[in-house]
Structure formats: structure tokens, C-alpha cells
Image (cartoon, rainbow over all chains, first blue to last red; front, side, top):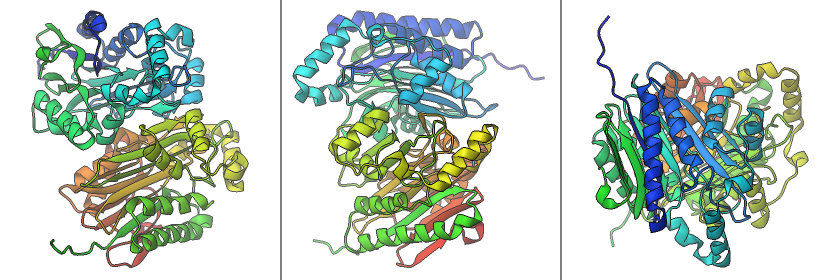
Length: 312
Length: 312
């Protein structure tokens, strides 16, 4: 039996690409660092890519500074509708993907997405059907009051007064947490979770739970999670576009070219975390800021939030 | 000003890739022929790709033999939840995409999807929010009773009695109508619409409204609409996969290779209609049957339903 070189695991997480206000930069950076460290420690203890990526995204969902799980934005009716998705691919197994959209009653939408993947023959459940499924599988429930933070309410009230300004918020791309992981077996996984955009129309779903747009992974190529202006990300299928570019480019070049293509074709801005099959990675964005943190093959935690911290 | 060679328009439609029973083959083939002819006549009168693709899919939705609009399958609760999407791309304009999922109250989901594209800053509305939007824009309403056919009720009752057999139906891929179009300006458009799978879980969404899976078009490359086992189509992003293969292959080869990739990675079967930037086209499937009809650059109506009618 040939001796295999052990694979050093990697994880990169993001907390959303948007115009993060100064009051939230410290908490956002600490939040992504904590999530990346948690995921990496799990990987180092032999956890699967799926377990690590779910744990990292749960940590981001539980952190009220991020717009996912607790801290989700409110829709135009003052309700919460969350979207999440998880995906894994490895040469030994089939492609696995699960997602929820317009879910309103669970603390951790990413775990409900995983349950869709593991406990149904389906990939995507939406709306009331997703809520009913979350209850059925015993996902930890949450009322709107428990999910909503004072900051989210304040933002909602501001947009209610000035609803003409909603397009400004769309263009600022306030949404989504995500993670990409390679485990010690070389298996790839990715995940995204979001509360969407403040004052969004009831039932609006962006890119986050959509395979190929908010996330994509392909064995032998890599894994990607995206954030930013959801409708632009959907139209160009940003996550898959980044992976396609990575077939002939480094992760840093692929992220840059993919974001440039989106900007050119849709005018939209966003961010990408990207990992190739060798554990090389990139975090890049065209918004003002994006909180990201990574532990790569060298085991060193890195993070950033401004353009000068960019890891291309 | 240079004289441009006039572009001969093309349209290809499908009525779903599955084990179409003998009792429905004549009506299915007549239905796709009528929809393709309708769309082609519009194109010949100067209609846009978007108008032609919407009209063709509306004709398929209105035909009770197909599982979309009237004739939709019933979910496990005996309700109707329909999904539809429309997309266009041309070098002069930005990419445009609109979709609905788990819509329950409109005759023509494709027209609601188009309204999402044209009247909101969003791309995808689901569930109650989609129903509210359909009412708001004055889409022609429909009750469950109006959408449901005796055949759909009979199938639902059969699956209610034998719910263990649901996986058989999933694998037979009973779903979706769609169309791809190139108009006289060379603009591409594609559209899909479906009532999903009988006895599906409430809130289940398949590939049809998901960009890159149920449909995709890219200026300079082509347009694609898919049908079949929704979860398999989602996992491999079948429509975009077919277009990627078409960058170095004919439409016929690209459809064949894309369906083979899906079969290999997921075990799932399905069908594809595919059109390249020059108006060359293909209709192919790995299910037992798929009803398709096309009018290509030569203006001749072709159609098929069995493998011996295959146009690779």
C-alpha cells in the first residue's frame, strides 16, 4: 500500500462583503477569526469537511454582528426569511447539496440545509415547507424576537422611512456569511447563510442558497463561497464562474477575474473566498470591505477587512 | 452602415423528459409542435426572443397534458406549488433573469417570473411572497381546482397509497416544460416551468427555476433548457454544463456529454434542448422519452418523442 503524504487542512470564512461601518469592524474581524479557528481545530482533530464547514457557519450565524441566523435583516413586512446552503464533493462519493430559502423559524439555517441534504431525497426546501421541515427534524427553533437584534430593527425602521433608498442598500451588498474547507482526506465543502437584505420584498431569495451562485465545489478543482449583491451574483453564477477561471489560474487571479466579469456584466460588487484542490486560497472583494479569516496549509491564522489586508 | 445578413430565428421546446405513457404520447407531441409553431410565427413577425419564449411556455402551461400551469402535479399535502424562470442575454444589454418558486395561485407562472425580472430589483421570489407578488401585478389567478387535472389527482392518490414508491417517480423524472430561442437580432432567451413531482414534500424546489441548472443562456455561446431528475440537474448545474461543453463541441455533442456527466456523477437521467449562437440546435435525453419540437434556421418544423426521433 503506498504511503500517502498527509493533507494539511485549510479553511477560509467570510462575514459578508459590504460597506461595514466603523462601529462593526472589530467585532466582524473577531467573529470571522473565531469561526475560522473553530473550524480549523475541528479539522485538525480529524473532523470531516462537512462537519467543519457547518460548525464554522453556525458560529457566524450565532454571532449577532453578522446578517445570518441571529442578527438577520428584516424584510419589508418586518419578518425574518433566511437562506442557507451546504455542498460537498469528493471523488469517492456523489455530489451532495442541501439548501433552504425563506426559512423563518430556526437559529441555524445551515443545519436545516444539511438536514435537507441528509434526510430527504430533495436539495432545496422553501418557505412554509422549509419551516415545517425544520420543526420535523427538531432543529433548534427561534422566534423573530430571538433572531432580531436592535441594530437590525434600527436599520429596518430607517429604510421604512426612506424606502426610496432601498436600491442604495442593494448596491452596498449587505449580506451573507460563508466558508470553504478542505479536510485531511482532501474532501472539499462549502457553505453559505444569510438573512438577506433589509426591507427586501417578502419571498425574495438572493444568491446564497443557489448552487453555482452563492457556493459551488467540484472535486479536483476547488470550493467557493460568495457574498455581495445577490441578484448580480445569481446572474453570472459567480461561485461556479470563479471555479471555472481557477482551472487555468491561481485562486487569487480567478477571484479577481470572476469579480471583474460580474462588475462588467451586471455592475454589481461582491466578495469571494476560494480554495483550490491543493489547499491554496484567496479572499477578494470589490465592495468597500469584507471580513474574512483563513487558516491555510501552514496552520497560521490570517484575517482582514480592508483592501490593504487583501489576500489575492 | 454595414449591411447585416438577416438572422433566421430558431426555437426549440420540450414537454419534459420522463417515461411518458402511451396514452399521452400523441397529445404531448402535438402540444410541443403547437408551442414551437406559435413561438416561431411570433419570431417571424419580429417578436423579441423574450416575447417568443414566454408565449411558447405559456402555451405549454395552458396545455393540461404537461406538468406546468394547468396539469401541475400535486404535492404531498394535495396542493400545487409551481416553479418557473426566464432569462435573456445579449451583447447590447445586461443579463436579465427572473424566477418564481412554490407559486400556487397563477395560471402562467412563466409570466410571473417575467414580471419579477421586469418589475422588481430581484431575481427570485418564493412561496407566499411570490403569490402576493402575482396578485399585485395582476397575473391571471387560478385556484388549485382550476390547475389540477383528473390525471394529476389520480396520480396523487396512487402515490398516497404507495408512498414508498415515490423514489421510483423521482427517478423517472416527471417534470418541466421549457424553450430556447434565438430571435432575428441574434438575442438569446430561455425559459422553464414546472409543477414539480407528484407527492413532493411541501416547499420542495427542483432545478427548473434555478439559473445554471434548469436554464442558462450566455451571449456568444448559446441557450439551454433542461428537464428530468431535478436534484441531479441541480447538483451538476446541467444547463450551464451543457453550454460549457458547447464552447468546444456541437450542440448535439455537448448535450450528450453533459447528460453523460450527470449520469456518471449523480445517477440521474434527464433531457436537454440546446441552441448555439449560430442557430444550430439539439434535443437529447437519457430518459425513456421526451417530447420536443423545433423550428430551426431552415424554417422546417421537426419533432420527436422516442429515441429514434432523436436530433443530436
